[in-house]
Image (tube, rainbow, N blue to C red; front, side):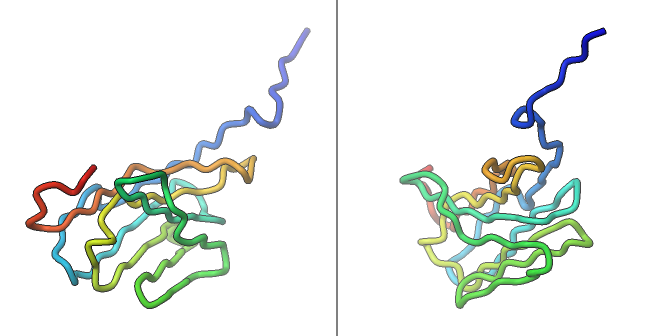
Length: 131
């Protein structure tokens, strides 16, 4: 009797990420929080931002036990017990317009990322945000 053994690189990660809100319209200066919820324990989570003129740009990586990272514009938190992360933006600016993505390392391969559904951020009164 033969058994098929799949190579290590074909193992598929079943972890699912759900980002909320799915879209948001804000005014300049508003604060906002974006959440990323996981179907499984979070050990590593990455946040990215994508403007209208290129690919995703890395913002921050959070690791189990690291909890929180912050600068003057953004605070990112990882809550391992609740299996969620949040990205808080203070005093939003037009330069913050774009798509925000959260992603996690694949369960079996550190060089693969699974990105969640997108959050599209637009400002009120903006007829065209360029996407």
